[in-house]
Image (cartoon, rainbow over all chains, first blue to last red; front, top):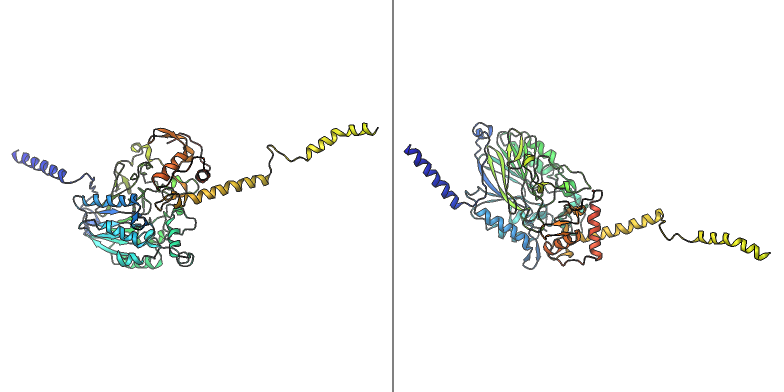
Length: 366
Length: 136
């Protein structure tokens, strides 16, 4: 009995110490079938990484930048530094800049350099790419597509925002005309995103070296499935990319671009969207003139309050547990959201709102 | 005799004169409809250009930044109570709110041509949706 009391006291003390040093970022791990699955057998360990995405830092003139968007990224960096325990690394999901200018990318790098003691894995977005076709990004930030391994999980970063050569190289009088054309989400003169044949071959070769039981995490800017073409919530050759990924037991795709809570399951592949630090996009269901394929699985985020500039934005973290991703969205003006793979349902579910009876009126988008 | 004959013809001439006058009230032709449609479309197009123009604000962004294809503007729900301001607002009040607070611009006069153009574009993108004043 006395040992029991001591143990309980010790546990209470540990909890108190933890509460004193950690800020409430709802870093809750959800575990499914640990120890009896292929991922564990293949040597995968559980770990957490953080994400920040879609900051759209906008240069106005001289040293002046859009203050609202600066604040979003700065806040994410500050909060990320308070994570306890620390994540293993950070993903940046693309669209650091609004128009791909050096001034914007340098400004973004300066703010992101505030992240302490963590590597950043960079994904390029169309706003970073279409001014100089990724030249400054490649020279100063990161390769545009690459892979790496971490604790038994194979990560692949894709440049999914390429498009047809004719659109890229022959249509626009200046590079900035091209950039602005792609930057306008609803531009009827835009062009669909794609990974492209060359990169798909690279992906096939890269994955040929990987055991099928190894969990895969693919990082892209656009969703690697097709939601809504008018706004490029879309990757033209998504089906061909998915075909390369389907043979693996557990595949997780994490993407940016859509600025909203969005998740889906196609075969073995779980898709999750990263939130933006800049502003929320509407769900395509709210555009009455065009059909959409928004996944029925997704419980929408709350409709943003236009009077509250940080509403509908945030950052987050991902737990890789038994090779499946559990995403925690830190939302600055709403209840945080956690979406975890449900082995029984066979798709990701929101841990609080998935049951229609628990959903709330602001989640109704029309 | 001549006079009597003339008098006899007066009503008939009057009818002919009336028939020759152009319609001045509620008669219109397919050409009129096409013209009016074109007038409306030109205002919608001006609204679309304004909606996508950074010149409405000062921070490099435009309305479509948050509202692609004018989505999530819900023109069919106005007027409605805005809990943020504590009063019933029209769409144009919210347009001005966004101009001032998100793209750092000057609010438009509520009866200005530009405001009509913006409303025309926003409503056009919402065509076919049932009116739902007051809805949240």
